[in-house]
Image (cartoon, rainbow, N blue to C red; front, side):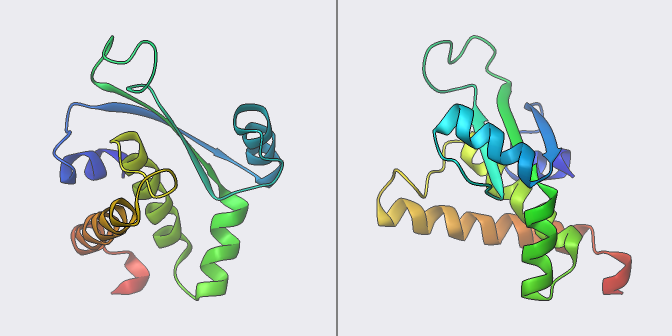
Length: 133
């Protein structure tokens, strides 16, 4: 699915790594690298920011997703687990591409949310789940 997201975002040659962990794993990563001692749903580590940016322009970075949070959020929203997982991956990839809803302006947050909706809608259209049919 990551390749399809990169294709939709016009970055077909880009590379990233994806790590799927449980709540304990993402909490440890969140604490160690972001000084936030709680589990979260997704964390992105961009390689094109800070020192070393541009050394390998095709290497976007890492996306870490909590499968526990994805499952819980999907159940709460009554949506397929796979859709929540895809949405979190889209969210993480957009962060790697420079979108920022946390440190940016309200306008930048809206721009990211709009792009999330566009990319996710395209994914669901192109790759519907068997349970959706």
